[in-house]
Image (cartoon, rainbow, N blue to C red; front, side, top):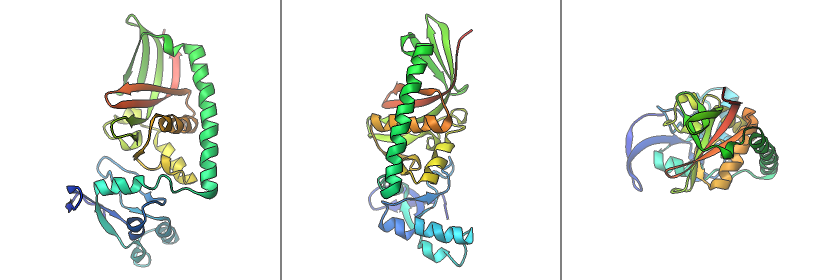
Length: 245
């Protein structure tokens, strides 16, 4: 059903038409199911767990299960607000598992960060430069490279909108620096961890470190480097690192 048609939203004016099931339209604070967003389709058709069960039973949408959807048209801005409302939907054993995962990954990241500092003294170098075209982060002193790291962008925090944006949903980033990050969303879908599957949601720098810790474990990275941007912070996973020749 996804199209590029424009609609006039009562709240946002002219916007892009998106489609969600009627259950999500009535109660967005639940787990969402949808295809992976792409540059061409940033707001893919979405449905709830009830509709997903109907989809899995038929392994496709057809005459037997499409009535369950009760598709509703909303604008892309309403879509983003609605899906962001789902991040606090996990309860019970899923919420407990999320807390345990955040805690374990934070502890692991703390150890990895300490090892990075001990082995490469990243905080002592005078300059750093990252290049998306080569997916590298270079630390240097007086123009001489000292440490070279290969990176995967995790996401960013905006201190203006106070939101987190996953790099797998940020198509301004070059493909070279987000080749593996989709694995985080896949992990989130498997576990029901909505903060890993919702592209953009209200967050602060602590949230950024928490989800970056999980990303580091899923990607089996050496650690995280955080850089300031014009409106917040960018978090990148260090996947390989070495001293410069």
